[in-house]
Image (cartoon, one colour):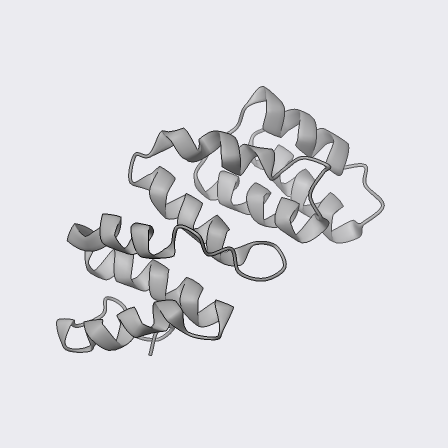
Length: 139
């Protein structure tokens, strides 16, 4: 339902809201995204309900949360998102951060420096994500 029905009809809104507390991190992420898109008037409610969720490797729920919040104008969360591109985080978190920043069309000296360093990393997945980010911004 969460992956295939968008926007969500109001008749299944409460069921989708229950998915925000599902055992599956993927279901939580999909529910957050779909609920916020389908019911933008309740975006702040959904962000509040999920503000402490991180998800699994790569912080999938937190990344989606940050993307939604920043897109909604909450720019105060940009520093947190950009910090996830740094070498102190594992490669999946860094990949997700570069991907979200690219979708947001956001770059800074910090993200460019972290992407440049990551583009030389031994991990091919991280290296490719960083190169993709740099290429997108013409660097």
